[in-house]
Every structure is written in structure tokens, then in C-alpha cells.
Image (tube, rainbow, N blue to C red; front, side, top):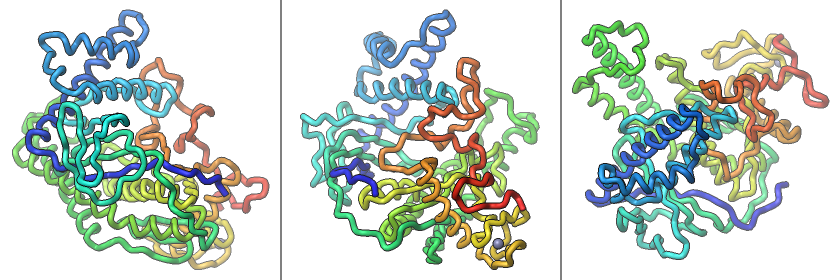
Length: 463
Ligand SMILES: [Zn+2]
């Protein structure tokens, strides 16, 4: 199997308890980070317009120092410097992701969209008091956090963020965390199919149901979202615009009081859904990592939502959020146990392929929970059949070297949004992904299964 590292990297998420004054400083810091991002982007745009080279993080950092000394932007100097350097580096990475075709070009950030800030932790200073839960941050003070588990290893950084319900969280990154003892796996591989509402079906036939409360919350979310759309349409109509047509860029809708309330409720509900999802997914990730050496699951759909939040888009985004959380947990739990996670491309027809004969039943509808294979007559439970196919496909991809074994060290955000490359002409052309991409772009990759491979199981193409 894989060579065992003696230590690993991981993240610890803690609930922060800032005082009112600290919360205000943090909120100001978020706003200032947004300001610096937009300012830096503006510098780059202006430089390009005059034919100069685009200034990078180092150039901008020097310009930022000058900005902090300028009288009209002196307020920047009252805030800690470090998160701004991070902002400039993020911008640099935004551009390189854009040129590699992994993301759209960096854009101006709107009010309220920056809700996190990263601080690196100096190893020479004792900034973190682990046992009592305090972290000393420059310009903010000594922040309290709740201690729920022992923080092991060297703590390298903390990202402070605020969720939709207004709660503050900190995510520590740590390295040098000792690896727990590896327990041998009971079976070589397991496939997981995550249904809507987060019920997991394993290829062994085991079913791990999520609580009913999550389903109820999702139903409420859907209701609020419909309400939000209605209110937005009404606001557009009040301004004499046709709600059926897309708003012209830059149009501001005058928000009503009710709109603001709905928005706040949606934010709070999202936070609560994320909470229960985390709780529900822990038994699943713990179970599969304990069970098998290779854990196979489906990839996320690259782009979950179209413009409108229709029923299908909603279902897909819900399913993706569940998978995303499961993947996050698997990434670190797999590393603890020395397991490998293999993700199977979304284009692999796991639900419609017959697990017995390989026939692809193209006519299968989403509502068909049970089906009979027209080619061999086998009877299938939709989800179990999908889990079995995923379990078969995952190790095969790994063996071919085309699977995507995931480790704890993941590149951030390449999957969440990565399908269109830059709109600007400066970027390399979109279309087929460059072969140098470390992670193959799942959308542009050709459907991998329908061609018959050398020694893979033969699968008929389309029936
Ligand atoms: Zn069949």
C-alpha cells in the first residue's frame, strides 16, 4: 500500500468567542481585506491598461505600505498587516488559476462577500494557549475559543471566519501531527453512494441514514429560497423592470424589509444545515474509513446551479454539499488510517449501468428507485447498484493512474468553480484541459468508461 508518513497535516475547527470589541475589529478587518483586494485589482488593471507588466504580490505589498501611510487611508494602518499580505497572495493565485484554466479571472468583491481572514502563527511566540483556548492575534487581541479536542502538532495558521448565522469560527492548520495506529482494513475497497438527504448507501449493502431533522431543514430552505425569488421579482416589478428577463449588469434592486429578513433567515438556516450535515457525515466517514483500504465516491458536479434555482438545481446543490462535506472528512480521516480515497468522475454512469452485465440503461429515470436490466434481467436497487459500480470503478481508476487519489493536502477550491476559464482573451483558450493540470478538469474530460479498455470490464456503449 502507500508508504506511511510518520506525521500528517490536518485542520482543527474551533468555535471562537470574541468579545464585542474583538468582533467589531474582526468585522472591520474583513471589510478592509475586501478594500485591499479591490484596490490591488485596480492597480493591476491600470498597469495593464498602460501596457505595463501586471504588478504581483511583492510589488503590491510595497504599494500597500505607502497606502497605509497616506493620510486618507491611514485607517488601514490600525489593522494588522498580515491578513492583507494574504489577500495579495490570494490575488496572485487567482491569476495563476485563471491562466491555468481552473478558474475565472479575479473580480472585484462586493460588500459583505469577504468573511474570513488568515493569520500565520509565529512558532517562536506562544500565540496559542491550547489547554485553556486562547489565541493571540496582532491587532485583535487575545481571542477565546472553545476547546473540544486536543490540538496536536505545530499550529501554522488560523483562518478566522464568520458564518451566515453570525457565529465566529477559527480553522487551525497543523503539521507534524502524529499518525494514529493503523488498523488493518476488513475489505479492500468500498463504494459510497450519497443520496439526497445524505443517506449513504455502501456497496456492501449497508445503509447509514441521516437524521430526519436535516430533511426538514432542507425543505424549509427550499421554501425560503422560493420566497426570496418571489420577493426579488416583486422588487424588480416595483422598479418597472420585467422580472422574467435577466437584470442588466449593475442594476441595484431596492431591498424591502421582508427581503432582508428572508435573506437573514436563509443565512442562518444554511449555517444550521452545515452543522447537522457535519454531524450526520461523521458516522459515515468513520465507518467507511474503518472498513476498507480504498474508499470510492463520486466526484462533485462541477457547476451546481444555473441562474435560477429550479428543482433539479436545488437537488444537485444539496447533493453536492453533502458530498463536499463527506470528502472533507474523508480527506483527513483517510490520512489518519492510511487509507486512499478515489473519486469517480461524474460522467461515469454509476446509476444507470447494470452492475451485473455492464449494460447502460439510458432510459432510466431519476424517479425509478428499483429497476430491471433490459439486457440481463437483473433487478436493482438504484442506490445500491450505484454504490457497487462506484466501488468497481474507483480501484480501476487508481490502478490506471487516472483516478484521483486524495490526500489531506488538497489544493483549495479547484473543484468548486473551475469550469470556465478566463473570459478575457489574455488567458489560454478554454476547451480541452491542459494536460499539465494536476487535477484533471472533470467537465472537459471525455466520458472515460464507454470506451473499452485493455483489461477493464467491457461495458457496452449506450445499449
Ligand atoms: Zn444487466
